[in-house]
Structures are given as structure tokens and as C-alpha cells.
Figure 1 (cartoon, rainbow, N blue to C red):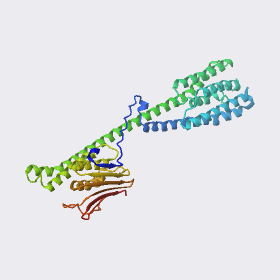
Figure 2 (figure 1 turned 135 degrees about the vertical axis):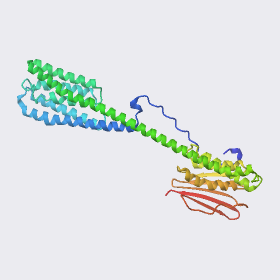
Figure 3 (figure 1 turned 45 degrees about the vertical axis):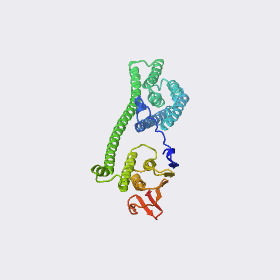
Figure 4 (figure 1 turned 60 degrees about the horizontal axis):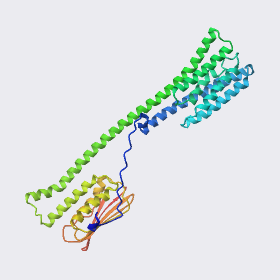
Amino acid sequence: MSSESGTAVTAAPALRPLPRPRAAAHSGAAAAPPEAHAVADASDRGARVAAIVIAAAWHLAVALPAVLRAGQGMAAPAVVAAGWLVTALVGVGTGVRLLRGGLPAAGPPAVALLVVDAAVVAGAGERFLFSTANWVWGGLAWFFLLVLWQRPVRWLLLMLAAHGTIALVAVVLYGATAPADLSRTAMYVYGTSTLPVAVFVGAAAITAQARDRAATAAATLAVAAEQEAAERARTERQARLALVSGTAEEVLAELAAGDADPADPAVRRRAVLAAARLRRLIAESDDVPDALLHELRAAADLAERNGLPIDLVSVGTPPELPVEIRRGLADPLTAALAAAEGWARLTVVAGPDEVVVSLVTPDHDGPDEPATGGDGPVEHLHERDGEIRWTQTRWRRT
């Protein structure tokens, strides 16, 4: 309230600026809500686990026994074994990173795997060129998949092309150029490449589809929530309009019909009460941080404008309260302010689980407040002793 009016307001919280709206994102991925990203991450995690399990199973259950069986019969068994170990280490490091939700560095592991590819083909020798002891034929492509996870598919295709080129060079150098050998080579390269590519592309597609569907569902729910909120706001506006109209209609109708005398103190008190309730009800729709204090301040301001010196003291910060609770706390005080004479002191004491609003005014001749009541979530107390009138409303969290 204005300083020139003489009304004191203690500890009234300052109005805080509303947050600025965030700019809408233009890209599809950035515009997707967090729920959509969570669904996509869950889908992608399932594909990561599947790829890791396939690579580990192939490396341990197929490649390792074949290398152990071939043993010293290979041209350089130590090279083949070392290549197996290096690939296992790359797989462990990459797999741990993928399971933790990150992406491994693609460059160094990819180069290491291509070096292992060439070394194992050479170390297996001509005798084991087309056997499972030359384990890079079928198992290495799954490790390509792991180190290139979520990278562009062309990177995987380039790796597989290099893998096929190494195999073809080995076939030519070993002189296995008969039609049957070349057909076998083509079958091996095709058979060991198509499935990893299918898993790689399929995982990316399923993840993108899951994100899109989750984003669509979230957008649909958001629209439904906005519609429900709009309908609720419309209903509340209609109820408030009906209440506001009913508050002043009776007094205005009597004045217009000549049934009420504007000079009558009782009529004037009714008019002041109607105006105070109108002002408080209008304040209910204001978007402010502390709605209860705002509504009480509106009622106190009207009383002060009618010549009543009033002090408004606030201690603590009221919690967010529903409109019905705020009305129960403020309405009796609004009525008492309309009938007050001389001066008034309005006090609000608030905590996280309790709000107490008290009004003290000089006692005077005139109608008394309603009897003390305790029904409902808000308690209403009223006392007078010939010198002062004391009105209090109290709400406690149950």
C-alpha cells in the first residue's frame, strides 16, 4: 500500500518476476521431451547389450576353442593368440563404456582391429585360411559394430570393406584363386557382414522410432493436459463470476429499487463488505507468488481507502494454498474489516504446516460477527470484550 496513506506493511514479500519462456527448439532431437529421450535410451541400451553379448559369445565360444585346437599347426600361433587377446581387451573396454551409457572413441580401436585382422589372417596361414581358427572371418565384424556404435553407418561399411579387402588379398597371396575358393571368400565376406550391418541399422532405426513415438505420446498428453487445464480455468472463472455477481447484486438491487438508504450505516457496511469481497475475489485470479497475502492486502487497501488506518504485519511465508482454503482464511477478516471503526491491525503468521490470520479492531456498537466455528479445514474464532474485537482464522495441515 502507498506510503502516503499511512498504512504499514511489515515483511511483505516482494513480487518476483516471472521466468522468461524458453525459445522453442527447431531440430527434432532437441525438441523431443526428456521422456522421449529416456524411452530412446532404454531401447538403445537393449540393442547395446545384445551386440555385446553376441560379440562376447562369438569370441569366447567359437574363436577361442578353434584357436586352441589349431595350436601349433598355424603359421604363427602366437600372433593369432595375441590378436585374440587384443580384440578381447578392445571388446571389454568398449563394452564397459557402452553399458555405462557412453560412446567409445572410434578411431584408435578401429585401427587396432584392422591391424589384428591382417595379422591373424597372416598368422593363421594358408592351411587355416577358411577354418574357424582364422577367427577374424566371422567374429571381428561384431567388434567393428561395438567401436562404431551410433556412428554413421558408412563408417561401418568402410570397415567391412577394408575387412573384405584384407581377406581378398590373403586369398590372392595364398593362391586360392580357384572359382570355388573365390565363391567361398565371397560367401564368407557377405555372410559375416550382413548380420552386423542389419543389427547396426536396425538398432538405430528402432531407437529413432521409439524416440519419435514417445515424443508423439508426450505431445498428445501435453495437449490433453492443456485442454484439461483450460477447461478447469474456465469453470473456475465461471464460478468466480457467479460468486462476484452474487456478492454485490443484492445491495445494488435494493439501492436501485429504493429499498435501502445509502445514509444508513448498516447499508454502508453491507456496501463496503460487498466491495471488499469483490476486490478480494478479483485478486484471486492474479498470478503472484504469495496469493493469500495478496488477497488480504487487497481487502486492507480498500479499508484504508475508506479512511480506516490499518497495519498489515506478515511473519513467515505461507505455503501454496487452494482457493477454498484462502477464502476460508480471508472472508471472515474481510467482513470484520468492512465493519471496523477507528483503526485495525491485521496479522498473518505462517509456517509450512499452519497459517493464522488475526484482526484486532476497537469494539463498537453494531452487529457482531458469527459465532465461533471449527467446522471444515479452517477454524474461525471471534471474541469481543467491550474494548476490542478480535477475529482469527486458522488452517493446519492434516
